[in-house]
Image 1 (tube, rainbow, N blue to C red):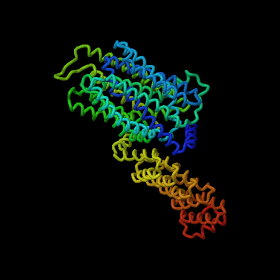
Image 2: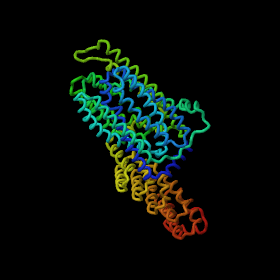
Image 3: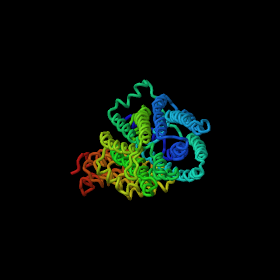
Image 4: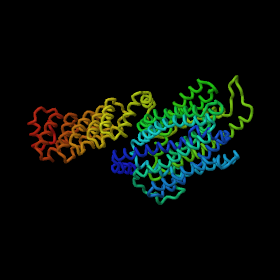
Length: 628
């Protein structure tokens, strides 16, 4: 673990904050185009409506979901290939462009086959092939991105990207819903979806080409390890095995319901594709609101407590679908509010497990750890959940549905009920997870329930993403005024900012918060090339005033730079700790600089509470090691 931390530190020295900001900006914009590809082609309500018009049943939706989930198994292959590669960028780009172009085969299915069953078989087969290519390349991309990002703030960078992508995607989703509604009203669903998918495929290819401008940090291929050894390593690690079990169970319980929300709203609640898409937009807005918030919580408090909260919160979605009624305005309002909340929770549900996979796994075999999680939780858990539930819903719906007054209980309702009950079981499993950043419930809940946390998340996002020196300076200053512990780690990273003004403000902010966690970085600031930081750093260490502050200041006495020595001696004098007496006396005999010697005499006089400087000087001149 120590060696891995050193590798991260070495890499962070090569990638400056400005260089990272520029690269991450490209990653974010490319990700937006990729998200639009996914929404226009795969995840939006137009595809659900298109499939229903082609004669798809709940079982077909289950098979399509299962085909996509089963293809996740190809991440195992992708992880093995990634471990052998020295360069990941070009192979990832080639495979992913092929994956995007292959979706054309799905779009043209209605023009190739007139038989509904043949069409569905074709669509299911190409969904599998399409997703298999995507998942083969996924480990390459995650390995590349995890090498690009600083480890201590990785979740915040992912949150920033997620928020940016979702915010803009939401705008385009509204436009997509309105434009598709035009075709839907005129009975031109096939034409409308074909045009949307065509635009999505073009955007998806441009997304990949944009990564030509993103650098690839060095990658050392994994050597001397067999395929069997690398694939079983995550299973042999007890702590990670508990995480695997949790993710497999959680995704199984979620996918009993999730693939069937849209067809349920269209078939049983008689909603148009427009309103179904608007409900999805509410979910996207929830992701936008929650991304920076959850990213900050994950980086500060670790993933275990966050997953415990999310395991409880995710019970709400299927439970609310149970009571929704067709042709009912309050049902639409309920689902809009529900999906906003679910999207808010989904922001954390993506970031927390992602943080585990990218931070709590060994770098040399990280891709296989990620692939194993996705294979067991999605390729197996989600596949079986989707297929079994789809068949179950069709089996129930083929029989007479139970009626309670005007309320009809269909196969969808039974699926949502089972999912609700099973999601409850994820709560005790989440409590068995291990996390180095274990915190009490009180600490987490205080942060979660404070509106100030959202402000901190906002300013941290500006600090990490803005290329404007003034905006970063303002963000740091405001974080200092808030004096919130959530800001500590981002402020520590700001000590390496290229702007001297930002570095000064970061020292002042850390001083105002007064945390011992900042002592080591402040000690390094004592040796910053800029002279104006030395006094600030020493003053901050002095005011924090812990035993670690004293140790940090004593390290400053080892410097050969007279400027560092002077500010350190003054700070030790003001700190007044007797433990500094002997090091100061030793330094007095080691230096010849008259000004420094005079400062040492003044410091010794103040610490030892000897009012006469002459007495101290006399004692030092005779070589005594004590001041009486």
